[in-house]
Structure formats: C-alpha cells, structure tokens
Length: 346
Image 1 (cartoon, one colour):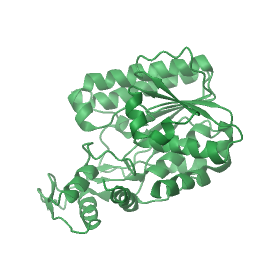
Image 2: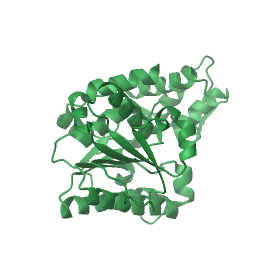
Image 3: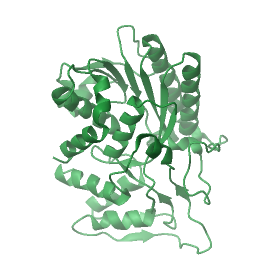
Image 4: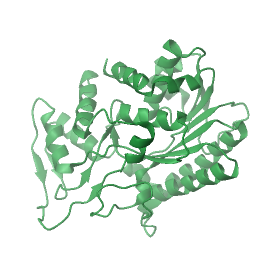
C-alpha cells in the first residue's frame, strides 16, 4: 500500500510532463537499484493508466534471473525488455531509445573503499559506453545520476553546498576513487553535451531513504535500523554532531523525472533534502520508531567551540527551476522507510 501511494504521488506531482514518454523508448541502467525500482514502477503505472501509447523500457542488468526474482511484476511485462550485460561492456546495436537514465553505480562505502579501482572503472567506462549509445540514437534527453561526493568535504562554515562549489575530493587517498570517478563521468557528460549538442543532464544525489532500502549497505541509517531490529545498542563512534539530511525516494524520483523531461538550459542539479539533522538525533529518532527503544551510546563528547561537520545540499536551483517542493522532511523520510520495512516484515 505504501509504495502504491508513493507512485500515485509521483504521477500527480510530475503531471503532464509524463506525456512526452508516450510511444517512446527509454533505456535505463541501474534499474534494479533503490531509486531505479521506483522509476520502473512509475513507468508501469504510466503505461497502464495514462499514456496513450506505452513507453517501452530497456533495462540493463547483469543478472536477469535476479531481476525476475526481485521485481516479477515488472519483469513479466511485455513493455519492459531486459538487456543482459555489464554497463562497461554491453553492446547496443539493437537498442533504439529516445531517452536514457544512467543510474548504474554502487555508493556503498564497503564496496567503493575495498575496490576503488574497480569502482572507478565501472563508473567511467560505463558512463562513456552509455553516452555513446545516447549519441548514436540522438536521444531527446540523457540523465546521469552523479553524487554529492564530487564536492569533497564540505567546509563547516558552509551551510549548504551549491552546484557551483568548486572544491573536490582529496585525490591523494584511494578512498576518493568513487568521488573522482563520478567527477570524471561528469566531465565526459559535459564533453558529449557540447560536442554533439545533446540534452545531457546531471543529478548530483545526496543521501536518500525509502522502500527497497538495502539494509546490508554500510550507512549510518541502515546500521541504526539493524541495531534496533536486533535490540542492540546503537553505538556512535564520534561526538554525534555530524549534520546531514535524508531525502525520501518519492522526492528523489520526482526530481529526476522533472530534470529528465523538463525544458531547461541548466544541466546540473543537486538532488536531496536540505533539512539537516545530526547523527545523534537520527539515532534517537530511529530508536523511537520501534516498539522497544534501544540505548544510544555516543563515544566522544561534543566540544562547544567545535562547529559540526555537514553534508547538506543547496537545492534552491531545483526548487526554482521546477517549482519543486519536498514532500517529506528528513525524519518523516526515515519513519516512512521504517514503516515499509515493518509492513513487509523485513
């Protein structure tokens, strides 16, 4: 029920812009991921109820059988076609598309930090491969899902990071591989935009939550939820003052559809929530969402003179360009995600 409500909300908020997809072909990478799942479910609803002619969607996946198991309602449909292959190596001679959403990546710190070389290779070569497909098909719009990681560490005195913030990750450490891969992929996108006069757009995603959240991913919010499920104390190995935000999946999906289908000369947008909360506040709130609260233990004392670290996007450009409004603040986004987990006994 919760996901159905979310999809109806996405359809209502984006509105008539969806008619551009009628009778078109869309190619998506990363369609089996967290946000990709919402995009596919939106397309299924559109084809069933709104579009005069269905939008045929090609879904790139390394493992079609795993996709069938995860999303049987999508995989069994004739208007969705799976393309087996790796984003870096797939061949696209038979793929005809009008729109592309390139979402294939992994942001899980465990994966990116343990295999930075493989992570960079997948991001850069994969993006180049998909851009070639876009140029070959002369697509109407290409959307690349980048990351707020491209900005590097946010200065503590900077309240929110705007799109024109020019600082970058620390290139002397291998843990910056993911962020630098995303930066390089953005440069590739800019080259194709200018050289081939293509509508190439970039969405820099910050932290998001919602249904289909991967509890095995090593993020603070997923760790806190797992601790509460196991009735174990939440341990924060810092002073707990780090400020970040959590954007709900419907807000992310609406922003992505607006950017893909919108008519604008602006090429790059931050996508996330500008409603900041501290890690300690997040931990206490997650604990309160369960029938039996678990204790929150903070290892380091907060120093009054120390400004908290921050990771918050400035989304004013998104708001002004598309009259975009967040439907959920950070705590509401987390609560709705936990409600879905409980609803599905996960």
